[in-house]
Image 1 (tube, rainbow, N blue to C red):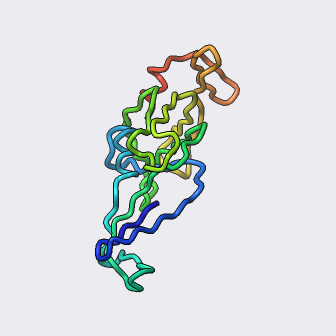
Image 2: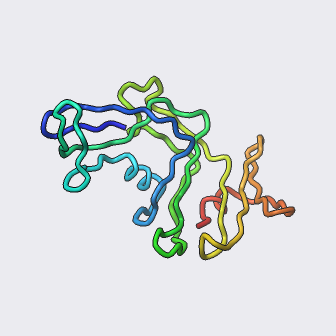
Image 3: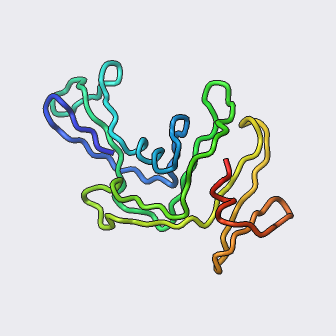
Amino acid sequence: SQVKFLSCGTESNKMDEIMDISLENLHANSLKEALGRFFQFEVLDGNNKYNCEKCKKLSAAHKQFSIIQAPNVLVIQLKRFEDVFGGKIDRNIISEEHLGLTGHMSIDSQDPRPEYTLFGSIVHSGYSQDSGHYYAYVKDVNARWYCCNDAHVSATTIQAVLSKK
């Protein structure tokens, strides 16, 4: 992440290793939109001012995430439950079989245009985070899709995978 202080222009960079990207989807209609919201800059002011090491005071700033090194396998978690009561956000998020991260990569990245192809999806059926059932969609080496639901495995299509809530 990078924090840029508005008063003095100082930039503070911090690198974190993350295993997945957890996306809020309360207001997003598509996976691309949720990714865009995750990587857009955030204004830190008021009670959220940041401590500038150069100025030695709390200052307004812009904070933004970017990816320096794209992973071989990209894991994205859509946060499907509201924080307050834990109710499920039960609406379709438009997804695609192919996803690029162009525009979300750091300027210093060695791989500025990483591309990913969906090969699995885990689905929660139920109405709250306290109850329900999980099952998975997986793609085999011949690009055939399967729904794995406990001991039952059945053939399916990419359209069925992308239409799940």
